Every structure is written in C-alpha cells, then in structure tokens.
Length: 187
Image 1: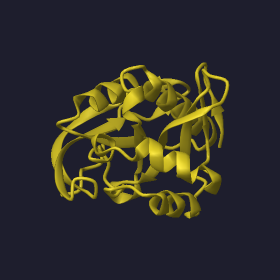
Image 2: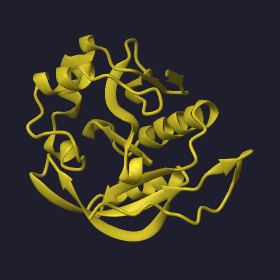
Image 3: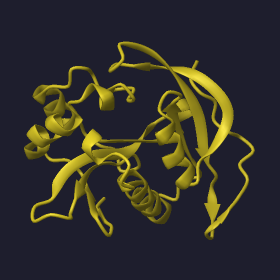
C-alpha cells in the first residue's frame, strides 16, 4: 500500500531504509510513547522491523516528507492486532517534526486507503495519558474515547504506561454508524 498526500509519501519500508529509520526513531522522547519499540533503538532493531513479513490487512508504512529535494523519513504509521484482533492504529514521528500536522495528514491517508481497500469495520487506538498531543491527533482522525483508561506495556519505558482507549466508528457510505461494542483495553 502506498499513499501520497500534499506533503507526504507513505510506503512500505525496505531494508535499505534501516539506517534512516534508526536515526528517525532513535529518540527516547519518541520511543517512550510506543508499546513495541525498544530503547535504545539500534540499527539492528530497524533491520529486524523492516524484515518482518506484513499481513495485507495490517499495513505498516514509513512516512516521508516530500517538501525537499529528497524525501526524508520522518515517521511510521500502521495497523496492528489490538484487543480481540481488532485493527489498532499506531504511529510515531521524529521529534523535529512534531506539531506540524504530519501525523494527522498521514493518518487521514492511511484511514482513507483502509476504508477504500480493506473496509475494516472499525479501528481502535490508544495514547499515553502523558501524551495529550497524540489524543488530539486521534480526535482529528475521528476517534472518540471509549471511556476506558488502562495500562499498557511499553518496551521504550521499560514498564507500564497509563493509556486512554479510543475507537473510530465504522463508516458506511461515508457516514458514521454508531458502534455499540467498543473494544476494551488490555489490562
């Protein structure tokens, strides 16, 4: 899956991206908000991530900024298995690119592509309570709080983090449909 927006290119990662990936994500302020990324994040971690096979219904893409002469790897976005195998949206951006709308732009592109091709019934997401900026991004993407606060393990923190659960209502013909079964957070 590929997506092009006004400022971004989203595409699958290739092994040749490993050095740029390890540099972009190699910041504790970034990794501490992720569940599966280890700290410190080394070149071998990037190579391992990029070599992992992907499921067609759980795409992972790297985010490249296209505003310069050469695209610059600035983040990642994708779907993984959440609670009860519900597709869960996750993303990250290199700190130098926070606050510029890139996460929202990438999220909109991925969700549009998934709505068009995968027709997933709904998406879930979670954000660390001490990362309210991520909550604002998710709200812009149509996610709403489930009302659940839980704890999630974070390799980057070396322990647990408090998270708020969110769900993006399913869409039918472009209109939101209420979802009575919000997926619970992992305890």
